[in-house]
Length: 489
Ligand code: ADP
Ligand code: GLC
Image (cartoon, rainbow, N blue to C red; front, top):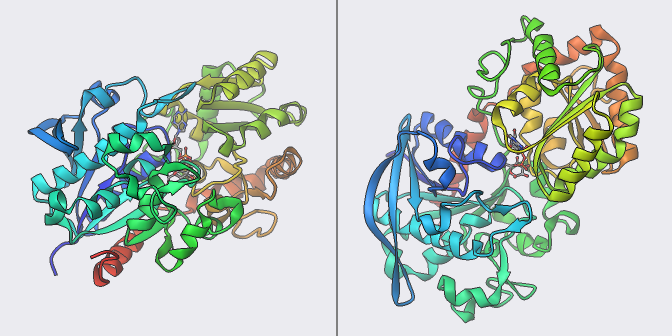
């Protein structure tokens, strides 16, 4: 059998463009698949952020066009290689030469439907033009969810790759790509697709429904979340639709690229360390404290948060817990970007408690690494969490996660109080201040026992979430898809 040919489509891919964990996954899963023998190409938009840096990207094809109604929308294709993986960039400055990827702190860009519908059609055009002939096209989240729709309904254009199976991976149910019906003629989708059986969702056009309905299989990024999204509480209105596809629904937990996220090799931290010699960790803590002007003693617990500042992440729970956090003798550093209301709340706290709370609003990858290395505990009181990568990074850095038992957090963190042998963190049940503070208090009481804390750190650092296992699960799934008839032929 020849190599399995996979095309992965994502609106963000690290190290090129990133707002959250999707980028980490789309940047590192392909490398793992490649080392397991797949032939893989990745597609993303050529954003301003990518153009501004020197990644050695070169022109691949000029004068490309997406047919839209009676007109053509031109674009160009660029490429760079990491190992043998081809990363392809769709260049259309009108849509992608902007300050941010999806919108500003005030809200989404108003033409996101047009931008990402164009992106998906340009990807399909490019796959045909490059002759990639994939076995599987693996789409991720709403931004690439229209690929299977256009594939199915635009056979005149994309018929030559019609044999490809479609996998749609949901990284977050809450972001569905919902737009007013009026957008349909502008993205080449006929009125006949505005029905509950197709793309209509409570009188809006839903990109995500295309991914769920027209793909051969649907997956999400942990087994726990795969179960949760079948419930009303977590299904965000699509639980019924997902239940119809239950037999084709898979949960595959994300992995970590330890070449980027490991204290032994991290190029952003003050001193490298590993589980044989932890002395660098306290140096990283002191360095972080001095950089962020935290004035507490280096013995006191330092808590870290690196997050998109969104409702999902339970930032309000942390904000309301701050007086107690201070009473417990802890200091807190927060790095985040997102909703303006959280920016204001967090900055307010840093002004009120300047010695103990440092807040950086912005996207800052080097600082994210320094927080992972320099803190004692990492807080994730998420309302829901499809997988979560930061708790996995934290484990590797010996920064003990304090997490809510939900989705991927529940799957990957074992509570120390429930299992002293295998425990690698602290879990609490409800997304409220009371439960969160109980979890944190339990963590702080173990922290005070230096020997036990040290053992816990070593246990955490030994956890292995490297991509290999998860990439093998994806390959298994791709093969299952290939062995079955296409959902629509
Ligand atoms: P999500 O994808 O929901 O945002 P994850 O935990 O899966 O959550 O992944 C978040 C990723 O984004 C991590 O790599 C984290 O370090 C990074 N990140 C989030 N916010 C920032 C920020 N403000 N600056 C730098 N990195 C960030
Ligand atoms: C999403 C989720 C996060 C997950 C990431 C990568 O943004 O919120 O839990 O880790 O995607 O799959």
